[in-house]
Image (tube, rainbow, N blue to C red; front, side, top):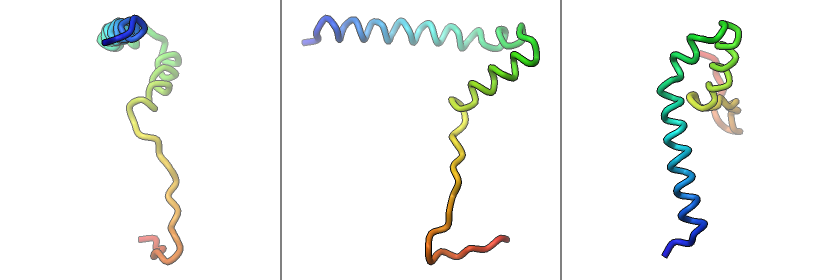
Length: 68
């Protein structure tokens, strides 16, 4: 049996998901309305949610280290 808090949390999540979906659908038009500098700023802020974070890779001891 769900508690009142669990029901409220699930309801809130569903409401927020619907709001986010609506905003995502409007995003292209919203971006077009921005000045180029603002648009670049927004796109840069959204990039971490689209692309994986690049991490430095370091060779371990015993692994070959060549530049081809």
